[in-house]
Length: 146
Image (cartoon, rainbow, N blue to C red):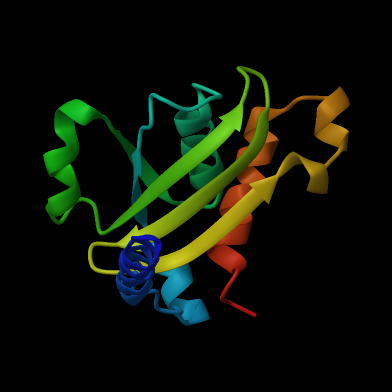
C-alpha cells in the first residue's frame, strides 16, 4: 500500500514539474519600449495601496498604467493592456516586507523579481512604500538590460 501511495505521489510531482511558464528575455530596447502596464490589483495582499505606489513608480519612468480590478479583468485581453504586472506580497499598511512581482506580456513572462525587506533595512525605521515600489519597478525593467 505504501509503495502505491509513493508511486502516485511521485507521478504527481513529475507531472507538475513538466508544466512551466514561458519566460522570454527582452532586449534593452524592448524594455524601454514599454509604454503602458496594467497593474492587476490583488486585494488579498498588504500593503493595500501597493497598486497605487507601483503606478506612481511607473509614471516616474514615463510609463502609463491602469489598475485592473476584479470587475474589469476583461481589459487584460484587449490591446490597451500589452503588459500586465501581477504580484503577491506580505507586509502591513506602511511597508512591503516581501513579495514576488511578475511583468508579463499577453503571452509570456518578461521579468520576475523577488523582493525582501531584509535587502533594504533602512525602510524598517523609515517606511516609504513609494520608494520600495520604485525599487521593484527598477529591478523589473532593468533586470534583463545588462
